Image 1 (cartoon, one colour):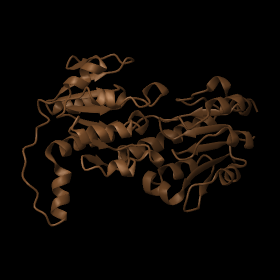
Image 2 (spheres, rainbow, N blue to C red):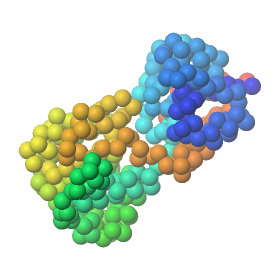
Image 3 (cartoon, rainbow, N blue to C red):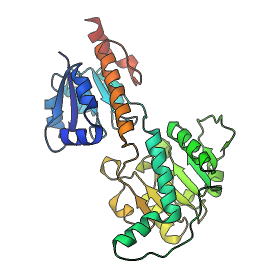
Image 4 (cartoon, rainbow, N blue to C red):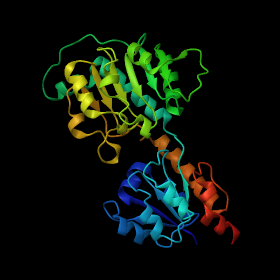
Length: 331
């Protein structure tokens, strides 16, 4: 019977992802779980994966060259989510190991969180709640509506398109910038980055993390925003120069910020940055909804089922180099 390794600690696996994947994969293969209360070290990961044909990687488990070198039976390294920057594709290809990634089933969850963060920033919901819990009656202040405000979406992919629909339902004006996107909705206006920054009341970063987008939001770009505007990042922490962000908030260059991601471990907001009084932070929960988790669980089961049945799954990143997969099929 084939073997599949789920390297995430069991307690976290069940808490964040439920049992759908474990139960479903158990009908296809022998499933090995991490019974420790922490993540594997690399030697532990190698030992646990010995004899396994598939490793299902969560964000904390990197696909390193040393791992692929040590596992002659490994056929596929499956990345649970869309982002696979921590997988050495070249090394996997050298060893003939298939790499796959997941589909974004969390566009609704992420987009809804963005709307909630925009409302909280505009109406000071979090600050008022914190004051009451400290026994202090907060001042009643005027806060702008989303209706009539302009949202600028940087990166118009699956999440950006879903967010745009929600924003339009709130009566917002929507502008986007993305050199790779084609806008079909007449209510959404595609503009340059500079124009987006200058007209938006809420700048939402949803661009893909690449070498070209590293520190995309920096002193220069923050300086082009309106001083009354808010910056929201639910993409990746790599896109933001955190020192420049803090300086922009301290100087009043921008009015406030919301972060669900950052440069801390597991893509969390950096604690020292998240503690800033003008920042509203959440612990990378954008995609953590039961519906999104169920969707991703079912999709990885489908991918594993295809691989074990000898069919290339969708989202195969290096299919041409997957010699071990082809050898398995030809047996």
